[in-house]
Picture 1 (cartoon, rainbow, N blue to C red):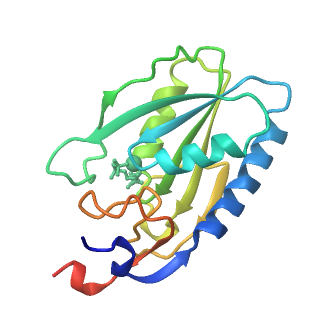
Picture 2: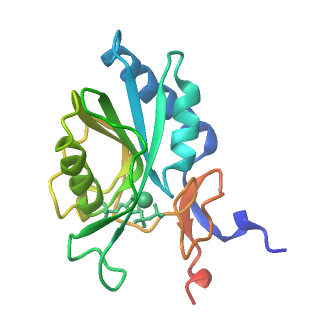
Length: 181
Ligand code: PRP
Ligand code: MG
């Protein structure tokens, strides 16, 4: 079988760096939500890895829930229209919510999700993302917790896919050109 690591041409963040940064973010969140109940909401499917590691980095109680969304149309996100494929199981009214995703690219997903969740009368809604591409942003998104800002390059690994592959890489990096051809 092909070895998944062999297609990475440039590692941006190693597993070790990722875990360290997530630990820092978790600590920041713990401090900010001290004395409050906290629900973290992961956005399927990309956020599975960061949710798993962040939840275990907390030393406090935390509830986890999940949403799955998809953009309408021909697979592009240019319409800005998002549809819910799987909604929360939790009633978030009166709850403190942190939405967790692994990347903000155009910002369409998170900007839509944040206003959607905000309309459900939560006590608060904040966003945490491991990666953000400032140059790709098309919609303003108010992000409280960011792991790293990265250049506008296609990255895979740690939940990020190319045609549903490479999500299970431990590192985050760019793909070798031969993968695309
Ligand atoms: C990716 C990524 C973010 C979103 C960011 O998810 O995981 O959720 O796109 O892009 P945006 O800022 O341009 O909206 P995707 O919808 O591809 O699904 P996936 O999580 O299942 O990979
Ligand atoms: Mg996603």
